[in-house]
Length: 408
Image (tube, rainbow, N blue to C red; front, side, top):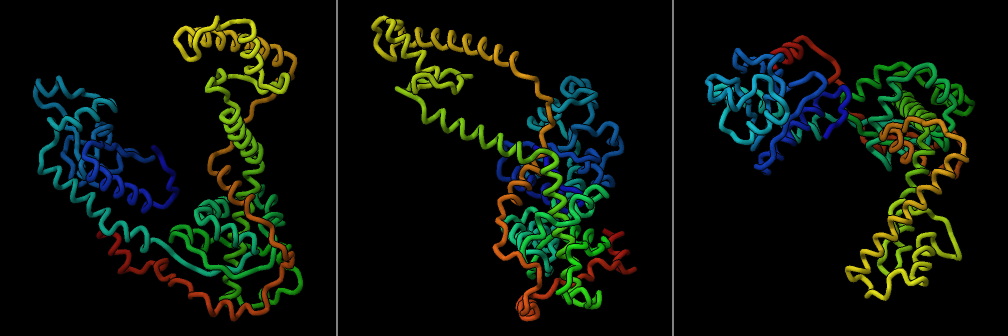
Protein backbone atom coordinates (compact mmCIF):
# COMPACT_ATOMS: atom_id res chain seq x y z
CA UNK A 1 0.00 0.00 0.00
CA UNK A 2 0.97 3.65 -0.23
CA UNK A 3 -0.20 6.92 1.26
CA UNK A 4 0.47 10.59 0.65
CA UNK A 5 1.17 12.58 3.82
CA UNK A 6 2.41 15.79 2.19
CA UNK A 7 4.68 17.94 4.35
CA UNK A 8 3.41 16.68 7.70
CA UNK A 9 6.12 14.33 8.92
CA UNK A 10 4.05 13.51 12.02
CA UNK A 11 1.53 11.70 9.82
CA UNK A 12 4.33 9.45 8.56
CA UNK A 13 5.38 8.52 12.08
CA UNK A 14 1.78 7.98 13.14
CA UNK A 15 1.47 5.45 10.29
CA UNK A 16 4.68 3.82 11.51
CA UNK A 17 3.22 3.55 15.03
CA UNK A 18 0.06 1.96 13.60
CA UNK A 19 2.13 -0.60 11.70
CA UNK A 20 4.14 -1.43 14.81
CA UNK A 21 0.90 -2.10 16.71
CA UNK A 22 -0.47 -4.10 13.79
CA UNK A 23 2.56 -6.39 13.60
CA UNK A 24 2.49 -6.79 17.37
CA UNK A 25 -1.06 -8.16 17.18
CA UNK A 26 -0.62 -10.09 13.93
CA UNK A 27 2.58 -11.99 14.54
CA UNK A 28 2.49 -13.56 11.06
CA UNK A 29 2.78 -10.16 9.34
CA UNK A 30 6.10 -8.62 8.27
CA UNK A 31 6.19 -4.98 7.08
CA UNK A 32 8.76 -3.10 5.01
CA UNK A 33 8.19 0.65 5.04
CA UNK A 34 9.99 3.39 3.10
CA UNK A 35 9.34 6.99 2.05
CA UNK A 36 10.67 9.36 -0.60
CA UNK A 37 13.96 9.59 1.34
CA UNK A 38 14.35 5.83 1.37
CA UNK A 39 14.94 3.80 4.55
CA UNK A 40 13.73 6.44 7.01
CA UNK A 41 13.78 3.98 9.91
CA UNK A 42 17.53 3.58 9.45
CA UNK A 43 17.91 7.35 9.08
CA UNK A 44 16.11 7.91 12.39
CA UNK A 45 18.28 5.30 14.14
CA UNK A 46 21.52 6.34 12.41
CA UNK A 47 23.47 6.68 15.70
CA UNK A 48 22.51 3.13 16.73
CA UNK A 49 23.41 1.28 13.52
CA UNK A 50 26.38 -1.06 13.05
CA UNK A 51 29.31 0.54 11.25
CA UNK A 52 28.90 -1.63 8.14
CA UNK A 53 25.28 -0.53 7.58
CA UNK A 54 24.91 2.50 5.32
CA UNK A 55 22.32 3.97 2.90
CA UNK A 56 24.14 2.24 0.02
CA UNK A 57 23.67 -1.28 1.40
CA UNK A 58 20.62 -0.67 3.62
CA UNK A 59 17.94 -1.30 0.99
CA UNK A 60 15.48 -4.09 1.94
CA UNK A 61 17.21 -4.68 5.29
CA UNK A 62 14.86 -3.00 7.82
CA UNK A 63 11.51 -4.66 8.64
CA UNK A 64 8.81 -4.51 11.29
CA UNK A 65 7.88 -7.87 12.76
CA UNK A 66 6.00 -8.67 15.98
CA UNK A 67 6.16 -5.03 17.01
CA UNK A 68 9.95 -4.89 16.72
CA UNK A 69 12.46 -3.56 14.20
CA UNK A 70 14.55 -6.34 12.68
CA UNK A 71 17.62 -5.87 10.47
CA UNK A 72 18.92 -8.35 7.91
CA UNK A 73 22.70 -8.71 8.56
CA UNK A 74 25.49 -8.90 6.03
CA UNK A 75 26.91 -12.42 5.55
CA UNK A 76 29.90 -13.10 7.80
CA UNK A 77 30.39 -16.84 7.22
CA UNK A 78 30.16 -19.14 4.15
CA UNK A 79 26.93 -20.60 5.55
CA UNK A 80 25.37 -17.17 5.86
CA UNK A 81 26.58 -16.26 2.37
CA UNK A 82 24.41 -19.07 1.00
CA UNK A 83 21.26 -17.72 2.68
CA UNK A 84 21.97 -13.96 2.45
CA UNK A 85 22.72 -12.50 -1.00
CA UNK A 86 25.19 -9.62 -1.19
CA UNK A 87 22.54 -7.51 -2.91
CA UNK A 88 19.13 -8.10 -1.34
CA UNK A 89 15.90 -8.21 -3.29
CA UNK A 90 12.49 -7.52 -1.68
CA UNK A 91 11.79 -11.25 -1.64
CA UNK A 92 15.16 -12.08 -0.06
CA UNK A 93 14.77 -9.54 2.74
CA UNK A 94 11.22 -10.63 3.49
CA UNK A 95 12.16 -14.31 3.56
CA UNK A 96 15.13 -13.83 5.88
CA UNK A 97 13.13 -11.60 8.24
CA UNK A 98 10.35 -14.18 8.46
CA UNK A 99 12.68 -17.09 9.07
CA UNK A 100 14.48 -15.21 11.85
CA UNK A 101 17.64 -17.34 11.52
CA UNK A 102 19.89 -14.40 10.64
CA UNK A 103 19.79 -10.93 12.17
CA UNK A 104 22.15 -8.36 13.60
CA UNK A 105 23.20 -8.71 17.24
CA UNK A 106 20.70 -7.96 20.00
CA UNK A 107 22.88 -5.08 21.21
CA UNK A 108 22.26 -3.13 18.00
CA UNK A 109 18.62 -4.20 17.75
CA UNK A 110 17.89 -2.87 21.26
CA UNK A 111 19.47 0.47 20.42
CA UNK A 112 17.60 0.71 17.10
CA UNK A 113 14.30 -0.25 18.75
CA UNK A 114 14.84 2.36 21.46
CA UNK A 115 15.45 5.09 18.86
CA UNK A 116 12.26 4.23 16.95
CA UNK A 117 10.14 3.94 20.10
CA UNK A 118 11.36 7.33 21.31
CA UNK A 119 10.28 8.81 17.97
CA UNK A 120 6.75 7.37 18.17
CA UNK A 121 6.39 7.98 21.90
CA UNK A 122 3.05 9.55 22.81
CA UNK A 123 1.04 8.17 19.91
CA UNK A 124 -1.88 8.00 19.24
CA UNK A 125 -2.72 10.96 21.53
CA UNK A 126 0.17 12.91 20.09
CA UNK A 127 -1.27 12.64 16.57
CA UNK A 128 -4.96 13.01 17.42
CA UNK A 129 -4.79 15.83 19.96
CA UNK A 130 -1.33 17.39 19.99
CA UNK A 131 -1.22 17.92 16.22
CA UNK A 132 -4.61 19.60 15.72
CA UNK A 133 -5.58 23.27 15.68
CA UNK A 134 -9.17 24.53 15.93
CA UNK A 135 -10.13 28.02 14.77
CA UNK A 136 -13.13 30.09 13.70
CA UNK A 137 -13.74 31.30 10.16
CA UNK A 138 -16.35 33.32 8.29
CA UNK A 139 -17.03 31.84 4.88
CA UNK A 140 -19.87 31.38 2.35
CA UNK A 141 -22.53 28.95 3.48
CA UNK A 142 -21.92 26.44 0.68
CA UNK A 143 -18.22 26.26 1.54
CA UNK A 144 -19.02 25.85 5.23
CA UNK A 145 -21.45 23.00 4.53
CA UNK A 146 -18.95 21.25 2.24
CA UNK A 147 -16.30 21.25 4.99
CA UNK A 148 -18.82 20.28 7.67
CA UNK A 149 -20.06 17.28 5.66
CA UNK A 150 -16.59 16.26 4.42
CA UNK A 151 -13.98 17.13 7.09
CA UNK A 152 -11.21 15.34 5.15
CA UNK A 153 -11.49 17.91 2.33
CA UNK A 154 -9.86 20.59 4.53
CA UNK A 155 -6.41 19.11 3.82
CA UNK A 156 -6.83 19.17 0.03
CA UNK A 157 -8.43 22.62 0.27
CA UNK A 158 -5.54 24.25 2.17
CA UNK A 159 -2.92 22.58 -0.02
CA UNK A 160 -4.73 23.82 -3.14
CA UNK A 161 -4.76 27.37 -1.75
CA UNK A 162 -1.09 27.36 -0.71
CA UNK A 163 0.04 25.86 -4.04
CA UNK A 164 -2.10 28.17 -6.20
CA UNK A 165 -0.75 29.85 -9.29
CA UNK A 166 -1.98 32.64 -11.57
CA UNK A 167 -4.18 30.29 -13.62
CA UNK A 168 -5.80 28.93 -10.46
CA UNK A 169 -6.60 32.43 -9.22
CA UNK A 170 -7.97 33.46 -12.59
CA UNK A 171 -10.40 30.51 -12.54
CA UNK A 172 -11.33 30.89 -8.87
CA UNK A 173 -11.39 34.65 -8.22
CA UNK A 174 -15.15 34.97 -8.78
CA UNK A 175 -15.96 32.10 -6.40
CA UNK A 176 -18.60 30.81 -8.83
CA UNK A 177 -19.14 27.60 -6.88
CA UNK A 178 -18.01 28.21 -3.29
CA UNK A 179 -19.22 31.81 -3.00
CA UNK A 180 -22.90 30.86 -2.90
CA UNK A 181 -25.01 31.81 0.10
CA UNK A 182 -24.60 34.22 3.01
CA UNK A 183 -21.37 34.48 4.98
CA UNK A 184 -21.63 32.46 8.18
CA UNK A 185 -19.27 31.69 11.08
CA UNK A 186 -17.95 28.12 11.29
CA UNK A 187 -15.64 26.09 13.52
CA UNK A 188 -12.78 24.48 11.56
CA UNK A 189 -10.30 21.80 12.59
CA UNK A 190 -7.01 21.21 10.77
CA UNK A 191 -3.52 19.96 11.52
CA UNK A 192 -1.03 22.45 12.92
CA UNK A 193 1.12 22.23 9.82
CA UNK A 194 -1.76 23.05 7.48
CA UNK A 195 -2.90 25.95 9.65
CA UNK A 196 0.61 27.38 9.82
CA UNK A 197 1.00 27.13 6.03
CA UNK A 198 -2.34 28.85 5.43
CA UNK A 199 -1.95 31.58 8.06
CA UNK A 200 1.38 32.69 6.58
CA UNK A 201 -0.17 33.18 3.14
CA UNK A 202 -1.20 36.72 2.21
CA UNK A 203 -4.56 37.24 0.52
CA UNK A 204 -6.12 40.13 -1.34
CA UNK A 205 -9.89 40.26 -0.79
CA UNK A 206 -11.56 39.15 -4.07
CA UNK A 207 -13.58 41.77 -5.91
CA UNK A 208 -16.79 39.83 -5.32
CA UNK A 209 -16.34 40.22 -1.55
CA UNK A 210 -15.76 44.00 -1.66
CA UNK A 211 -19.41 44.76 -2.33
CA UNK A 212 -21.25 47.35 -0.19
CA UNK A 213 -23.01 46.12 2.93
CA UNK A 214 -19.97 44.41 4.44
CA UNK A 215 -18.78 46.70 7.23
CA UNK A 216 -16.55 43.90 8.46
CA UNK A 217 -14.07 44.89 5.76
CA UNK A 218 -13.64 48.24 7.52
CA UNK A 219 -12.53 46.61 10.75
CA UNK A 220 -8.84 46.60 11.73
CA UNK A 221 -6.84 43.64 10.44
CA UNK A 222 -6.31 42.46 14.04
CA UNK A 223 -10.03 42.31 14.86
CA UNK A 224 -11.24 38.71 15.46
CA UNK A 225 -14.05 39.08 12.92
CA UNK A 226 -11.71 40.38 10.24
CA UNK A 227 -9.19 37.60 10.94
CA UNK A 228 -11.98 35.03 10.71
CA UNK A 229 -13.16 36.51 7.39
CA UNK A 230 -9.66 36.41 5.89
CA UNK A 231 -9.26 32.79 7.02
CA UNK A 232 -12.68 31.86 5.61
CA UNK A 233 -11.92 33.44 2.25
CA UNK A 234 -8.68 31.46 2.03
CA UNK A 235 -10.66 28.27 2.60
CA UNK A 236 -13.34 29.29 0.08
CA UNK A 237 -10.68 30.04 -2.53
CA UNK A 238 -8.97 26.71 -1.82
CA UNK A 239 -12.24 24.86 -2.34
CA UNK A 240 -12.96 26.80 -5.53
CA UNK A 241 -9.47 26.04 -6.89
CA UNK A 242 -9.96 22.36 -6.01
CA UNK A 243 -13.34 22.30 -7.74
CA UNK A 244 -12.11 24.07 -10.89
CA UNK A 245 -9.07 21.76 -11.13
CA UNK A 246 -11.34 18.73 -10.88
CA UNK A 247 -13.65 20.05 -13.59
CA UNK A 248 -10.71 20.90 -15.87
CA UNK A 249 -9.20 17.42 -15.34
CA UNK A 250 -12.42 15.77 -16.45
CA UNK A 251 -13.78 14.63 -13.09
CA UNK A 252 -17.46 15.13 -14.10
CA UNK A 253 -17.07 12.77 -17.06
CA UNK A 254 -15.11 10.26 -14.95
CA UNK A 255 -17.79 10.25 -12.25
CA UNK A 256 -20.52 9.82 -14.88
CA UNK A 257 -18.63 6.91 -16.42
CA UNK A 258 -18.19 5.23 -13.02
CA UNK A 259 -21.90 5.63 -12.32
CA UNK A 260 -22.77 4.15 -15.71
CA UNK A 261 -20.53 1.14 -15.09
CA UNK A 262 -22.11 0.61 -11.66
CA UNK A 263 -25.60 0.82 -13.18
CA UNK A 264 -24.67 -1.64 -15.92
CA UNK A 265 -23.47 -4.14 -13.31
CA UNK A 266 -26.75 -3.79 -11.44
CA UNK A 267 -28.70 -4.33 -14.67
CA UNK A 268 -26.62 -7.41 -15.52
CA UNK A 269 -27.48 -8.97 -12.18
CA UNK A 270 -31.20 -8.20 -12.46
CA UNK A 271 -31.39 -9.44 -16.05
CA UNK A 272 -30.08 -12.96 -15.39
CA UNK A 273 -32.61 -15.63 -16.33
CA UNK A 274 -32.93 -19.22 -15.16
CA UNK A 275 -29.49 -18.94 -13.48
CA UNK A 276 -27.90 -18.93 -16.97
CA UNK A 277 -25.38 -16.08 -16.92
CA UNK A 278 -24.67 -14.17 -20.09
CA UNK A 279 -21.12 -14.43 -21.43
CA UNK A 280 -18.74 -11.59 -20.64
CA UNK A 281 -18.78 -8.86 -23.27
CA UNK A 282 -22.53 -9.24 -23.94
CA UNK A 283 -24.04 -6.15 -25.50
CA UNK A 284 -27.17 -4.36 -24.35
CA UNK A 285 -28.81 -4.63 -27.79
CA UNK A 286 -32.53 -5.38 -27.52
CA UNK A 287 -34.19 -7.88 -29.83
CA UNK A 288 -37.90 -8.69 -29.42
CA UNK A 289 -37.88 -7.20 -25.91
CA UNK A 290 -35.01 -9.48 -24.78
CA UNK A 291 -31.24 -9.04 -24.51
CA UNK A 292 -29.23 -10.24 -27.49
CA UNK A 293 -27.84 -13.21 -25.51
CA UNK A 294 -31.30 -14.24 -24.30
CA UNK A 295 -32.68 -14.03 -27.83
CA UNK A 296 -29.74 -16.09 -29.13
CA UNK A 297 -30.20 -18.72 -26.37
CA UNK A 298 -33.96 -18.89 -26.98
CA UNK A 299 -33.36 -19.49 -30.69
CA UNK A 300 -30.93 -22.34 -29.90
CA UNK A 301 -33.49 -24.01 -27.62
CA UNK A 302 -36.17 -23.86 -30.34
CA UNK A 303 -33.76 -25.52 -32.81
CA UNK A 304 -33.04 -28.38 -30.43
CA UNK A 305 -29.43 -27.38 -29.65
CA UNK A 306 -29.52 -29.03 -26.20
CA UNK A 307 -30.93 -32.34 -27.65
CA UNK A 308 -33.26 -32.89 -24.72
CA UNK A 309 -30.47 -33.09 -22.14
CA UNK A 310 -31.52 -32.39 -18.54
CA UNK A 311 -30.89 -28.72 -17.66
CA UNK A 312 -27.64 -28.18 -15.66
CA UNK A 313 -26.43 -31.73 -16.43
CA UNK A 314 -22.86 -32.13 -17.73
CA UNK A 315 -23.81 -32.61 -21.43
CA UNK A 316 -26.18 -29.63 -21.15
CA UNK A 317 -23.42 -27.44 -19.60
CA UNK A 318 -20.97 -28.49 -22.34
CA UNK A 319 -23.49 -27.38 -25.00
CA UNK A 320 -24.08 -24.11 -23.11
CA UNK A 321 -20.32 -23.44 -23.01
CA UNK A 322 -20.04 -23.89 -26.80
CA UNK A 323 -23.01 -21.57 -27.29
CA UNK A 324 -21.38 -18.87 -25.16
CA UNK A 325 -18.08 -19.12 -27.05
CA UNK A 326 -19.86 -18.82 -30.39
CA UNK A 327 -21.87 -15.85 -29.11
CA UNK A 328 -18.70 -14.07 -27.95
CA UNK A 329 -17.15 -14.60 -31.38
CA UNK A 330 -20.23 -13.13 -33.09
CA UNK A 331 -20.28 -10.14 -30.75
CA UNK A 332 -16.53 -9.56 -31.21
CA UNK A 333 -16.90 -9.43 -35.01
CA UNK A 334 -19.91 -7.13 -34.69
CA UNK A 335 -17.92 -4.90 -32.34
CA UNK A 336 -15.05 -4.61 -34.85
CA UNK A 337 -17.49 -3.46 -37.52
CA UNK A 338 -18.94 -0.84 -35.16
CA UNK A 339 -15.46 0.43 -34.25
CA UNK A 340 -14.47 0.79 -37.91
CA UNK A 341 -17.57 2.83 -38.63
CA UNK A 342 -17.03 5.19 -35.66
CA UNK A 343 -14.38 7.95 -35.52
CA UNK A 344 -11.53 7.24 -33.12
CA UNK A 345 -11.67 9.29 -29.94
CA UNK A 346 -8.56 10.86 -28.47
CA UNK A 347 -7.53 9.17 -25.24
CA UNK A 348 -7.57 11.31 -22.12
CA UNK A 349 -5.61 10.77 -18.94
CA UNK A 350 -7.96 9.95 -16.06
CA UNK A 351 -8.06 12.56 -13.28
CA UNK A 352 -6.38 11.75 -9.98
CA UNK A 353 -8.54 9.87 -7.44
CA UNK A 354 -8.21 12.79 -5.00
CA UNK A 355 -9.72 15.17 -7.57
CA UNK A 356 -12.58 12.78 -8.32
CA UNK A 357 -13.26 12.32 -4.61
CA UNK A 358 -13.14 16.08 -3.99
CA UNK A 359 -15.42 16.76 -6.96
CA UNK A 360 -18.03 14.29 -5.69
CA UNK A 361 -17.93 15.82 -2.19
CA UNK A 362 -18.15 19.42 -3.40
CA UNK A 363 -20.63 18.83 -6.21
CA UNK A 364 -23.01 17.00 -3.86
CA UNK A 365 -23.19 20.01 -1.51
CA UNK A 366 -26.51 21.73 -2.35
CA UNK A 367 -26.70 25.39 -3.28
CA UNK A 368 -28.11 27.48 -0.41
CA UNK A 369 -31.68 28.74 -0.85
CA UNK A 370 -30.71 32.23 0.26
CA UNK A 371 -28.59 34.00 -2.33
CA UNK A 372 -27.61 36.97 -0.17
CA UNK A 373 -23.89 37.37 0.48
CA UNK A 374 -24.27 39.67 3.45
CA UNK A 375 -23.23 38.86 6.99
CA UNK A 376 -25.83 37.86 9.59
CA UNK A 377 -26.97 40.74 11.78
CA UNK A 378 -26.28 38.78 14.97
CA UNK A 379 -22.69 37.96 14.01
CA UNK A 380 -21.30 39.04 17.38
CA UNK A 381 -23.77 36.86 19.26
CA UNK A 382 -22.88 33.85 17.12
CA UNK A 383 -19.17 34.43 17.68
CA UNK A 384 -19.63 34.62 21.44
CA UNK A 385 -21.19 31.13 21.40
CA UNK A 386 -18.26 29.66 19.46
CA UNK A 387 -15.16 28.47 21.36
CA UNK A 388 -12.14 30.72 21.13
CA UNK A 389 -9.36 29.97 18.66
CA UNK A 390 -6.68 27.64 19.93
CA UNK A 391 -3.49 29.45 21.06
CA UNK A 392 -0.99 30.03 18.27
CA UNK A 393 2.13 30.41 20.41
CA UNK A 394 3.36 27.01 19.16
CA UNK A 395 4.25 28.79 15.89
CA UNK A 396 6.65 31.15 17.70
CA UNK A 397 10.13 29.67 17.98
CA UNK A 398 12.10 30.91 20.99
CA UNK A 399 15.79 30.19 21.79
CA UNK A 400 14.86 27.70 24.56
CA UNK A 401 12.41 26.03 22.20
CA UNK A 402 15.10 25.75 19.52
CA UNK A 403 17.49 24.15 22.01
CA UNK A 404 14.78 21.65 22.97
CA UNK A 405 14.26 20.73 19.30
CA UNK A 406 18.00 20.27 18.76
CA UNK A 407 18.23 18.04 21.83
CA UNK A 408 15.37 15.90 20.49
